[in-house]
Image (cartoon, rainbow, N blue to C red):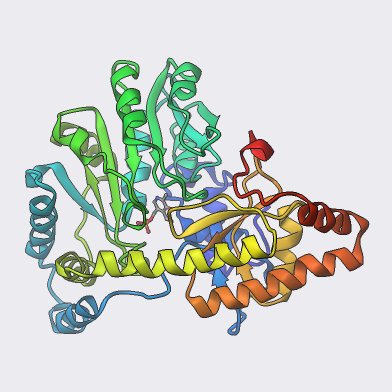
Length: 405
Ligand code: PLP
C-alpha cells in the first residue's frame, strides 16, 4: 500500500517504484525526496509552518554566483546549448586532474546510481550495500533481479569491507556511501582500497560521494585515475544546495561509463542546472564556507544533545542518527505534531531516526520539539519514564556501537 500522505505526484511515483507496478519500476529512479515523502506523517505534507529536516536538503540553496547565472540564462532557455554541459564537465575534470571523458553529467546523481546498478548487477551478480545505508540502489538491484546483500556497519560505523567481500563472492557491484547516508560516518580510503584490491573479478566498486564536501576525508577519484574498477558519484544537491536544480556526475574509466550510458541512454541536461553548477564550482569560498556552517550548526546540536543526555551517532555530514530509545516511528509522529518533520528510520535500527542538519533556527525548533516529545513520554508512559531515568543515570554515551552492533 502506498502511504496516504503523498502528493498526487509522489503517490503515483511511489506506486511505480514500490513494486506494485513492477514493469514500470524497472524504468523508474528512486530518489531521496521520494523516500522522505513516503515516510512523512500525513499532517505535515501541506504544513506551511513546519520545519523539514527529513530529506538531507541544504536550506541555504544555490550560492549567489549560481543564482546570478540562473537569472542570466533565462533568455537562452529556448536553446539546447549542449556546449554548456561540455564546459561544466571540462571545468570539473580540470579541477580533479581527470581527462574529460572520465566524467559524465546527469540530472542529479540518482540516474547515474540507478543505471550503474542496473549495468553491473543481475540475477547472477549481486548488489552489496551497508545496513543502514542509502536505499536507492536496492530498488535498482531489485529491478535487475539481483540478490541484495546488506552488511552491518562496523563498530565505528564504517562499511565493513571484509564482511562485504565474504558475504558476496558473486558480487556485481559494491556500493560504498562515504559519508554514509543515514549515519554521516566515513569509510577510510584504505578500506575502500582493500575492497577494490580484493573484490571478485568483473565486479565494480561504486563510491557515492554525495556528502564528501561536508567531511574531512579522501575522495576515491584517485582510484579512478589509477585505472581501477571504481565509479565515483558526485552531486550538486548537497553542499551546493541545488537539489531542485538537478545536477550530478559519474566519474569512471570511459569503458565503465559507456556501460552505464548503454543503460541510461543520453539526454540533454537542463541548462539552468548546468550554469548553476559551473558557477558553484568556480566559487572559491563556497565549499569551505558551507562546510564550516554545517559543522557549526551540527556541533551546536550535538552539544545540546550531550547536555540533555540524548545519544546519537557522531556524524561528519549534514545528517545524523538519533537514538529515540523507543520505536522511532512514534517519535516521528510525535515530532510531526510539533510541526517538525524529521527523517525516517532504517529497519535494522528501529529505535533511531535520521535528522538532517538545517539552519540554526530550524535546529532550535527541532530541539524544543524533541525535548517536549521526549519529556512528554515520561508523563505518558512508564517505558518513556524508564528511558529518561536510565539515560540520565547512564554515563554520557555518544558512541552507540554497543547498542547497534
Ligand atoms: N546518493 C545519496 C547517498 C543521497 O543521499 C542522495 C540524495 O539524498 C543521492 C545520491 C541523490 O542525489 P541527487 O539525485 O539529488 O543528486
